Image 1 (tube, rainbow, N blue to C red):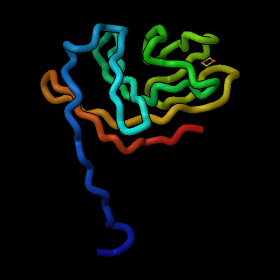
Image 2: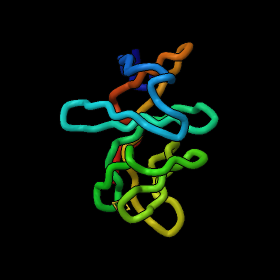
Image 3: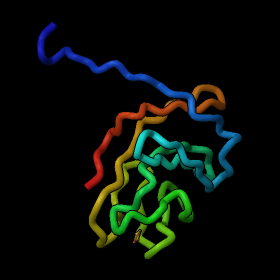
Image 4: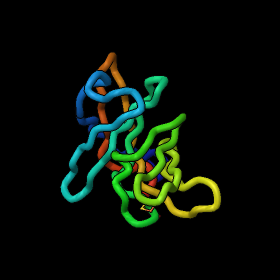
Length: 117
Ligand code: FES
């Protein structure tokens, strides 16, 4: 094996089903000190991002979901559920986590895809 073929093993963790999350709603998953918000969009896409706004740590799980974004309940920053990045003129990013949906079951890889900044 050379340095280019090293692959980390992914551990998928079952966190519930699509039916556990209302459309345009979320559920929280705790991983140690990290809270992860699992969102379901109006068209049944599932995303997982850290439940902490990049502005001042607002609880994104309590925000309003629209398209593939969530509006933070504290000061209305809009965060992309796909990238975790603040939209528009705002700057910052919440960590995102890989999601796998099998049937109606939702699995997360608890290693973030993108780190917060
Ligand atoms: S804490 Fe989210 S917009 Fe301020």
